[in-house]
Image (cartoon, rainbow, N blue to C red; front, top):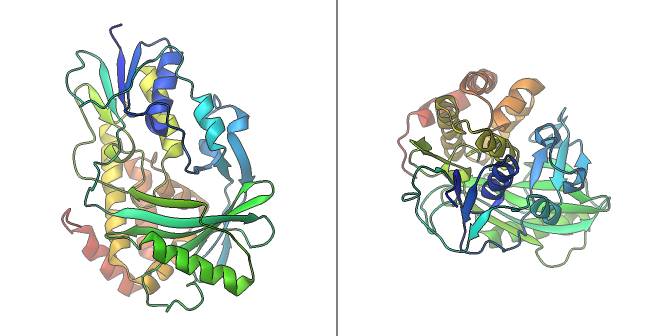
Length: 345
């Protein structure tokens, strides 16, 4: 088979692209050293970003999240946790020539190459970390972000937030998260903070159910003649939030359509989001709480635009300008200074 599309890496972005391209009648070859490995991480997505072709069974539970930075706020948008096994099973590889080995991006003839291999092991770059447990739903309040420090953690200590979202009709994930760090807070420290929160509320929980540790951004080109990156190698992983699944599913449709999945506008918007990551890294704990208090006080449209890796440069710039105008002057100075920093972590 002479492939039309070659996919490197069969994580969510690569598998979705291979699935959609094959369903569209393209000849697809996919390379992954462990193509049958089952996924265990949980994926959250805004429900307005779930494509119509994805079976409804892949959505485990929907909710209307709230956030707390300095005050409690509702988010005017529906959020969903996906059923990870159902998602992986739905992204079938029927008709895909799957090769169980790792290869480089070159040497695939005239095929379009989607590079979804993730970050190189040991990459020195900002990362997101988390430690989570699952408890019965109803035993803890549900908050998409709760920036209040855990009991016993000084307000000036490096910030983390509690991510408390339903993962099933009767279960709730409580996850202490370091949104971005270079280096990030260690998973062990996040587990300690989570236990302090649980003990303060009298919530019983067992061992850690989920740990998170992934790279948010790496330098380098996002696309070139005959190839494009996905995930951290492309523009579908949001470097300031870590969210990527909705954008990865949209990228799969772009690959299947035969159009270049990463445009110049995508790259420009991604660079803007890198500026957002630099700003986040420059803020101390109290400044981060002030920043998110101002951010979530914005109207829903700019909030949604900034949170999405699919937003173009105009919408992204407008959202960034809106939050810049809304934060205190001291924060504006920090944000402005961070924008000009070189790519050094």
